[in-house]
Length: 221
Length: 327
Image (cartoon, rainbow over all chains, first blue to last red; front, top):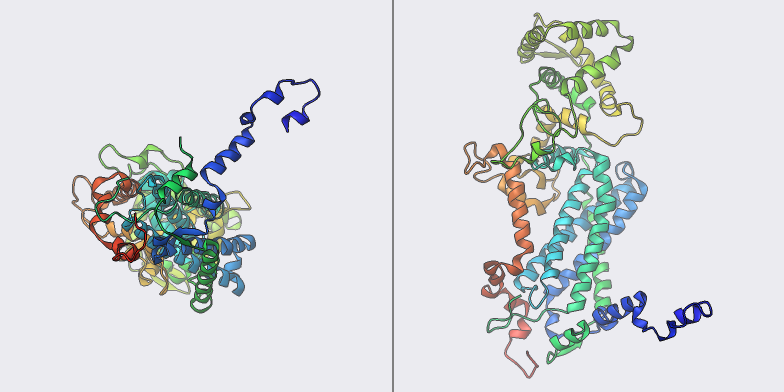
């Protein structure tokens, strides 16, 4: 492309320049190398992936999809809607139960991966990002409880301020400030979780599923 | 460097591969989880107990309201003596040299007496000469005189009675306090104080720091939380109103408040109930870091090998071989 689009005579050596100078080409080649489509969306898996434990990761993603979808509806309609409207309250309930399911599945996934020692054979970073997702999800749910605008929100806020202030966090993270908590809950933290989950999935697909622990001892990370 | 694609293929070399439809599994998972969530929403609904307002507080328990407001004036309330980030009345929590509460100073300044009592009364005294005179008397009095009035009024409030929402105390020398407090409780019961504590010269606002701190100083909201089994001694923030699950994922965090040394007045190595918030946040931070670093921590990373849960998970792999390839 660079050769055909260059003004005539502007860069006579362009045709001879190796194509690897193209950042676009390099990026595409790197993606092809590290995550070819047959790794991203494989239609074959090792036979031991047939265990039910592998389902926990998928259902966690499914629950997250419902959390985000119901959250988008709630944020679109605004905070008063889920208190004053039956439809709004239904979507609030959908968000509530999706979050509960999300955490149940995520904890099962975490424990499953722990007892499978899923970090083996170069997968430590995948585990660590998973832990960061877990922590970020707790923070997101916490800001969600603070954003409910009901009695539980008041109680959680009044009590949580002491923990935040005692640790010095309250000077910047004011749990009594609805605007700050709501903004974090509907915008920054969900974006963070989404990016981390995508990275987590890409790392899983890039490396593939870890083998069972060797009966004779197995490999260490 | 070997390409990652080659690495994965090398990693799986010799392993029997079977058909696996990830997309179909994801779609089924989304539908199944959605059905469960929709049924939960439709059948079980969700908790939404109406918030307490200063109006409902002052109507339901005017004595607690006036006692709290008097405490704000006296500087004896929780928020008045809190310390950072609201004021400098207390050094805050610390553990040896670790004192993050004081490190960042007063970033959300609050003068409880002024914010919760004096300023609202000043605004309300615009066309109320009786209140204006009482406020003038209060502000022109010496600190010793104010303390004498506050002490006497606080003691009288213990036996206060309520009639038509008004708080009455035994006759005594309380200076202008009865007039100030009867006006404040009247404003609060009418809903005016809910607005006065949040406007601060603005029209739009989303910061409820002041009214929440004021209500937190009182006993009414805490009493309702106790009735709803939400309080800290009952695992606090992981609870939810009604029979609904709350933030159950905070079980480990809230558990520490129930055990030694964080529930003890004497404590251990400088950690006690007095600095439990700081101690538990530090502990949870360390535990979270340890969880993230499990792959590198010898004992923790070896537990899965010792406890044969993986043999249940990969039953097919560990089962006696029936001609299947195994690596």
